[in-house]
Image 1 (cartoon, rainbow, N blue to C red):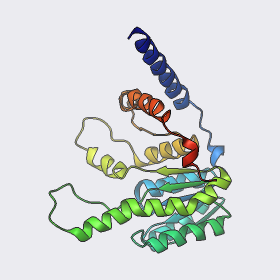
Image 2: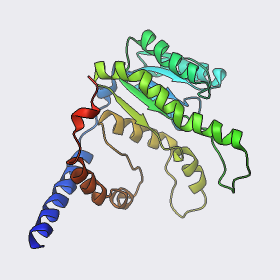
Image 3: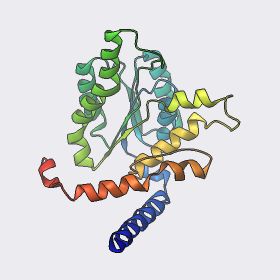
Image 4: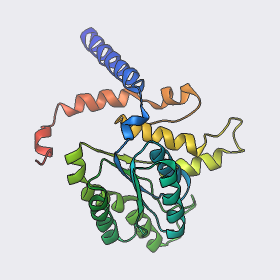
Amino acid sequence: MAFMKNYLILILGFFLAYNYYSANEEFRPGMLKGKKVIVTGASKGIGKEMAYHLAKMGAHVMLTARSEGALRKIVSDCLEYGAASAHYIAGTMENMAFAEEFVAKAGKIMGGIDMLILNHIISSTVEPFAGDIRFVRKSIEINYISYVVLSVAALPMLKQSNGSIVVVSSMADTAMKAASGVFNVEAASKEDCALEIIKGGALRQEEVYYSKSAWTSLLLRNPGRHIMEFLSLGYYNLDKFIIN
């Protein structure tokens, strides 16, 4: 029992040290210069702000959302902000054929993909289920299946560039609006939140928790989960999961 206790303490210390040093890795805007980045749900909110940040860092940006008018304006702004290039393709992620074709066109226009930022959702209210199966199906298609389709389509190009996929919480933008005026703390701005998401993607962080309070990140980081993942991975032959 004493040996097991010491073993767990050693593992816990390892993961705490890993989280500390990885969280403090320095981000440099130059990391995104010339990178080819896709942002979905880019017509407003956090998606739009991520596009602006990426443009100011000198990245190539490819944007998509349903609103062509909004995308056209944002692309124009991105070019003024210094984007290496800026393009958009309007469409709905309810259409899986569009999602797959969008990635192919984006890769062809930009000459590859370095980062895929999945930020689109269909919003819904939290209320008892009223029997609307069509809405449930639509929500699953947009909020889940389209993410898989986009990721699978982009994976060959991301492998070539050693790129990354960033998935933004479906509640990120909504949570900031809901917090405003309710809690006696200043709500995080979408501009700052967008920047933290980009930093996390550039540094290849597993998760990003953004708050003005250091306690939020500390409490949300769960060393117990990391320990269980570390121990459970020993039972799997990971080579079987890798398709060369």
